[in-house]
Image (tube, rainbow, N blue to C red; front, side):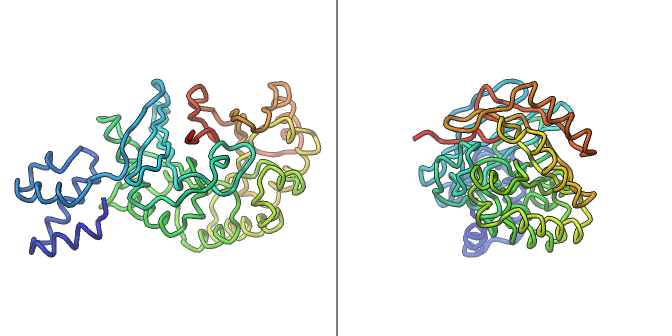
Length: 331
């Protein structure tokens, strides 16, 4: 919901400020499907709100999944579509949200990039993905957020910051900063800007190779921000924030050799706050080939020998094309 227009409307109606706060609280609670259900408002006001506003900016078209993972296709007011995912880790529930319709970066391992870029999502469209999931899974609720859905969050900078403020605010969705993570493909100048925000929000870098020549073949953004630029920005981030920085590394048949392990070790050993998340590659049409189980095991042996601290991430929703890199809208 466009809260600026809501405020203007209520002011024009000469309604007291508490009405605005009341409606906003109801909206963020995720307990209401429509204004009609807000029985703490007068019938007349509910009728006027229905005629002037759409409570939500995203609308469910299709849901697939199982007990641990669900993916939804959401239609936006202009007819564009996005996908969003919720994952149940038993002890907490995480929503994976999109920040753009499509993506301009065209990473070879990502289905979203093959769509091309359509437009940025508004703050409302980002927020409403989370509210949608809270409605869907009630009485459970989303307690963690990852910006790892469709799009490059740092290329939707202003709207991202507005959404983050609402997600983290005690008068918004009230999700703690340390329970929010943003993944970037390596937009170095924005990594520096993000460090200067002095936030506790987690940051992850899609690295996937510490070989500049290979990385730029699978991630064209590496031509604009090469590994030296990226490392400088990342070092600035950890020195400025003193927070751990996560590097995502999808395991393919092209980046899991002993030589690749040495390059990765050299990169990660640049700072004690650099940490690697290894990710089994999720298949996409026309994408890269996943490393075999033996290749994955041998690569981890190389990393162990080189003293690299890492984790091997679980993959959720691969069978529903809901895992990392698999979100896309088929035209």
